[in-house]
Length: 272
Image 1 (cartoon, rainbow, N blue to C red):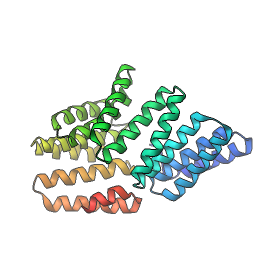
Image 2 (cartoon, rainbow, N blue to C red; image 1 turned 180 degrees about the horizontal axis):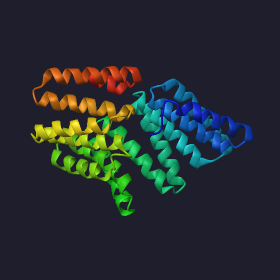
Image 3 (cartoon, one colour; image 1 turned 120 degrees about the vertical axis):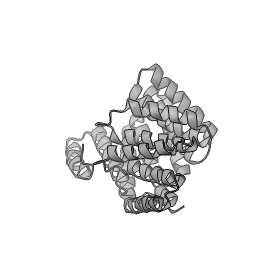
């Protein structure tokens, strides 16, 4: 696995070389890559600085495809900081730019990004429509890995809509599609999403088992999103099972990890 904590330092060396050679496109990608990793590590302000510089340069060189990428990366960081409205605005801007460029892949990515924010805002019907459009496009193109990721988002929507059987089917399909050895974070997310659906269906024992599987898959994975999601999902499952002390312990672990990573949205949820 790539060591994300040393990645910014190593990428900075590549970035310095790109600056020296005058390759401004490479500079944009280097800044964007560093910014994305810093955001994942919870270094939000540092990430903003890198991503804003990348966006400025991409606009200066007039490359609209790179500009759409930078706008979306900045929106990712806005989302990590808990600013849902700013994130949605950024994804919409990137989406419109990708549409004007006839960038099919970019359109799908930004539609899915926007759907994720709409889900967080409780705008379930809009999120459902976008996720379905992207999922259909991925399956038509035979992009099973991408379809599995989109399927997880749609599964979350279906859970929130009170359709747990559909959510469970989508989550299980996604979990089977990810090779655990290479995509441990996604595999764990799919298992945890499925566990939440199982709770809603009254299948508490199966939900507990899936959460344990998710924790096992994540051994050695330091990504914040899957680890936090699994902890919170397991806390909800244990609450449903009547294991309140264990649920409080898991929620406490999630809160501590979220605060260390400065992951605002997860911190707030863990306090509820």
